[in-house]
Image: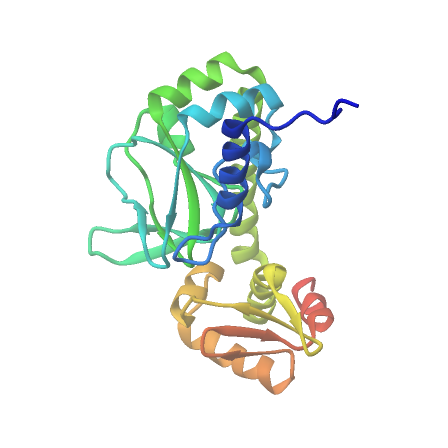
Length: 262
């Protein structure tokens, strides 16, 4: 009886094995290599991840995926905007600098967010400096190719409008939080709850890497470094959280969330 199974062609088998190997490969920074949005294991509902299948397929040939270590500069304020960066994995801080060289952190970008969208659309230089807070994977798309892409894909244009609207809303929320929060403790608690979202349970607590200094946290919540240090000490005394080196340990997430919601 003839064998009903069809043997896999050598070239197909080789391609499949290569793809499987690549999916298991990690970069020197410990991140899994994800170079295809259609099969990405860390895919979310954010921006590019929410595109239609035809749009995601059209993205692949124009995207250039790279990984970066902690502390890498992705774009510099004042540089000509060459394209956009999609933050696929990791976190990055968005900075601005005054004429005296003093820096201020505007926000922390998380996976799924797009960097450089506004200057690409307006034709202006990059208005921020972006520095990775931990090993990151980013996908870069040159300006001309990105503009052509959103013109040809209506769902992508809609996602761009949504992303810009969300950025505007987040800016309002930051201003409201800084200006209307009742206390520094409330603002710091809100920041720590958001940061702990990526934490991993361990021994009944949440542990997450916190690479920000007290000064950087103070910039983000609109208070002084001394206030952040004093408030963290009070949180530790209340057994809410503690910071051990670069590790944030959340001991009582429910109490921290209650404080953030005041």
